[in-house]
Image (tube, rainbow, N blue to C red; front, top):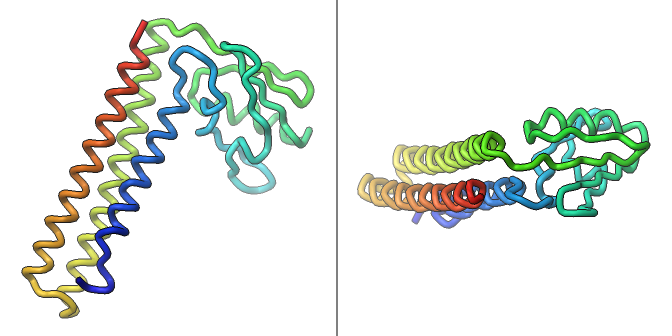
Length: 186
């Protein structure tokens, strides 16, 4: 195998996209509050985009309430805005440096909305996997062109990359189906 082509690295990067998706899906609320629900929230803080957990502490005081304790008083407005704009259907109530976020009842409309969000997350993961595939295939083509590997090896490695891609896409689809079933359970 060529030094520039590493199938294990491609598989690792594809698994990274799947792992990221599973984290995003874990943040989608199904019936009870979870601190992971706010994981996708990114705050504009100190001239940079930062995950919410780097500017505040998220806690779950009761099953349908989240508390966000902002560390820096000047960041409260930015955190509140980020939560509202994250398209999670949440409206924080500000009390000093503490944001209380009551979780709305999961009605049929909200469940459909959550399923759409889950589908967006899954599609982003599929796109990420395809980007990794494209990078791997580009590396193979370049290696063949440079004479590092033969055309037969290039075809064989490209087939392995496609199989890894197919496996990652199946894993993405399975995670989506499981989450969709979880959300739609009444």
